[in-house]
Length: 181
Image (cartoon, rainbow, N blue to C red; front, side, top):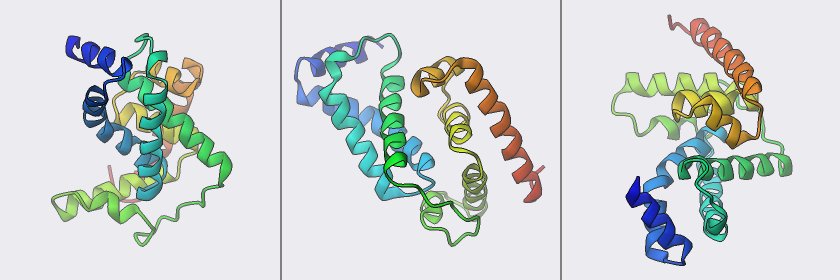
């Protein structure tokens, strides 16, 4: 924690090396979050992740450590994703395995069973509304608290809880319909 504070201070003072350290430490989580939000569109996820870090670099002096640095980064990534959604209406993701990008999500899995499960989970996530998918992804996959999700998304905590409840119910129903218990 103390090392992160020193790195943040150095980066805010203009150290490119310190900021590169922050990017290395946090890029995986940011890219993973955006990949799920874009429903497997790796190119768009990478573009948004890159823009996230550009914005973070530009506004690093604005970071007040009221939340964790990862939470702040994720909130930037989320706002960029929402802006992208407003610019270009995303096509609805179909649920067959030939869907663009879904195979890329499973390709890093070591076994066919794990790959199939990951595809099923991604397909289930794709059936959720964007707010439900955001809240479920942030809590269940990324491990954020309800308070952090509310901060990232600028939603009321009770709204986050509602999206989580409905999203988890929809996920469970989808997975039950597809052979999971």
